[in-house]
Image (cartoon, rainbow, N blue to C red):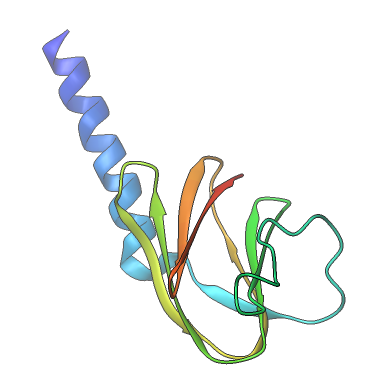
Amino acid sequence: MRKLIVILTLLFSLAISSMASGKVQWREVSGEIQGRCITDSRTSDGIEIYQRSGAIIIKTQYTIQVKVFTILGQLVSQATLPPGVSELRLNRGIYLVKVGNITQKVAI
C-alpha cells in the first residue's frame, strides 16, 4: 500500500512539474468568443475570463500579468499577456486564475 501511495505521489508531482516547466503555454486567439463570461467585466477592469473546450480564455484591453494555480496552490502558468484574446489549454481540473487583484475559479 505504501509503495502505491509513493508511486501515485511521484506521478502527480511529475505531472504538475511538467505543466509548470513551460510545456503549457498561452497563445493568442483571433475571432469572437462565444460562451458565458465567468467574470463581470464592469467590476473587473474590463478583463473577461472564459472557459471553453479544455481551455482558459482571457480577453483584455491592455497588457496584464496572469498566474494560474491548481486548486492545491501549485503554479501551472505565469505569463504577461498582450491586449486581445489569449488561451491556455489545460488538463481537466479546477484552477485558480489570478489577474491583478482578481482571482477566479475555473473548472475545465
